[in-house]
Image (cartoon, rainbow, N blue to C red; front, top):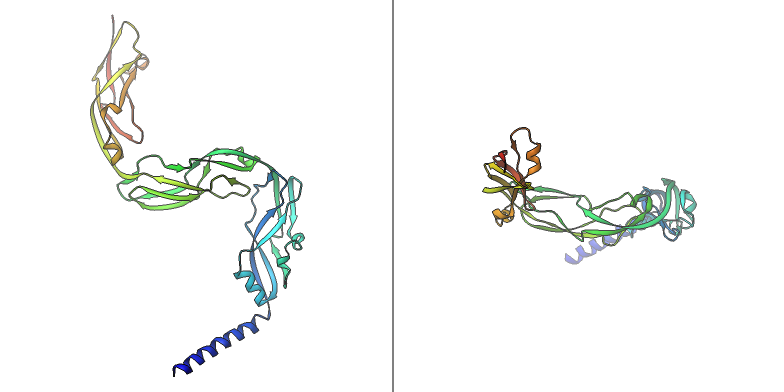
Length: 303
């Protein structure tokens, strides 16, 4: 019984192969998407013009040949730019001969698009800082406790002069991360742009995610700066309290002497209300929630 089953299975497989071989010998029409690649730029030149990444070919040929195009390695439609800079208007039908892999047992019926237009210009290099394209979503009560760290934090970008001279930063690819509740390290690529090359494509991104909490500080003395000779200023009161918010690990290490509260004498001279708002300098990576009192009265004495 087992022997008969094996013979039956072998027969079915052979029949399928035979049927497929006969069927794929017929002529078929299909659409094939191939990568558009520009080659042979003049030395030191490129293009940043928007071009389709792929073009669509309507082809006719034997089934086995069309299958090999679709399931094989990614194919390229190569277009030689030539030695001239400036505007190029190229008809892609003129490049069929230079893409001979297409002409082997295959007839090209249509190319979409059938022409391309682009500008060839000089290449320059520029060092640009990396910025985030990440969309971050946190668990309730959590957040980014400090600035995002990029390694490297800047890259040398080489590209067309008309575009690169206007660029002041380079962005990572757009990516969503959620839900975040702890320190996270990931690697992301820089956004791909036609005609641009980076000295580093993969960027390490470090996200300092912590529970976000509040902390109260009281009795911080307010100083008056730049008091001229023979003048004295009395603040009423001369101490303030305030509330700050930040990551739990950051706030846990903060001490009162890391804050600086002051008022400049010139602001007292220019005041017409009888009270002024103190200036509070904060450590990095904390945000001020409120100050109490938010205004201070004062007395200026001369002697």
